[in-house]
Amino acid sequence: MTTLEHLPTGKPHSPGLMGEFAFLLCLGILPYVMVASLGGVVVLTGICLAQSPRDIFKRLYQVGFAWLTVLLIVSTLQATYVGEASLQLLNFLPYFLVWSAISGRLLAHKYPWRLMERWAWILVLGAIPAFLGAGAEYGLKRLDPVAFPSLLVALPPLDWLYTGVASDPRAYGPFDSPNTLANYAVMVLGLALGLLMMTLERSSRRSPRPAASASGRLAQSPAFRIAALGLSVASLLLALYCSGSRNGYLIALLLFLSSAFLFKVQRWIRWLGFGLVGAIIASVLTFGIGDRPVSGAWVTQDPRVYVWRLALRHFHASPWWGKGLGSYKLLYDGSVPGYTEIPHAHNLWLSLAAESGILTTLCLTIAIGLICYRVIRQWQQVQGVSADLSLVKGYSLTFFAVVLFSLFDVTLYDGRINLLAWLSLAVLYGFGQGLGDCRVSSRYDPDDEKIPL
Image 1 (cartoon, helix red, strand yellow):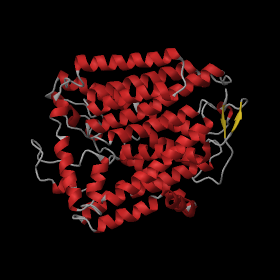
Image 2 (cartoon, one colour):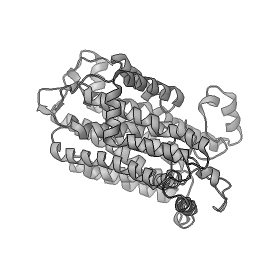
Image 3 (spheres, helix red, strand yellow):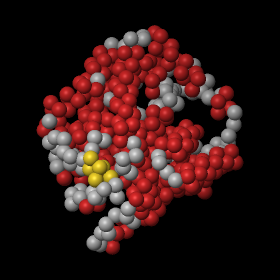
Image 4 (spheres, one colour):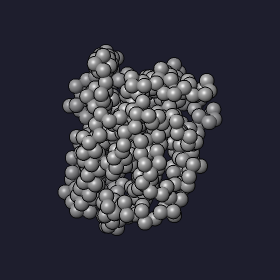
């Protein structure tokens, strides 16, 4: 198998192999036990910070996140509700450190591509029960909409894991909103597509060396991996339908269409993808999305227009520093027909502009835009070198999914969405900084690496 082999670029920025295993565990439980998962990531980030504080802060300064931190703090000090704005800083500042720690680990790791592949597999396979559970929730709500809420309250651990609204016919899964479930699903879809294309490209070039054990041979089998990824994609499409999220369906279609041109695949696979997109569109037109029939009112009567107007009024009132993070819901004046409360502006950039000002919004956009620009330049240099490049493209689709979703909703304040977004951005940053500067070895096989979890 032709793949990418990388040389070490520095000392590790993690607590070693146990730290890598702990991070995998945090990613595996991310959809289900968010507090424990994020708490573990914070502890690991703290260890990295204690080991290499200069490296982590230098990276934040070079990219621009240090300046963004200053702007966020200044905006918070001038906020209408300083307490709420200070609390909302937790949605940004800790994740800057997490991003820098993950980026440093990738750049220092001897085999960064293997590390990224492990993360992708654990995220994709680990989310399958959550998506299947959302489908079961959707069905149970229709079998007995009266008994189902009582069931959730009476049966532990369902009463602890379920944070949705049992009386709402839409599926929530382990999330507190159907839209958050849909956002997580399309982000996982990006990773699944990357792993699928990587598996297909590897299998078409050379079969991996057979493992000694039967379980090892099964795990290395392309057929087994494709079947597992197929189950993942099917389960997340089920969750998308049950969530009733129009944004989720639209973004899933865009990801499928993007994959047809982003990845190097055989013509029949591309046409199979087009057929899948056609089937999804036909099902939406026929059955709707989660019992929500297709209607022109989705566009003509969308309350987001009123929500965006209110955000623009807040921005015009305080364009430089905004009203303060989290202030939108507190300043809501009831101007959106039929809604007594609105939590946010349903557009990340409008929300940031209204709450933290134009300087903060531009700084964040430019910093992330420059990272993406370097990724595109690196792509052009190593295009066609390895099947492993499909993995980076999968992470790119994951980040692309959350960016698209943020145009019509703000689910980034959910810790699971936030962590997955910054993890994807860390992978893209690492690739743009030199993970693609490598030598090609046709004899190298990642399955030969004797590195435990």
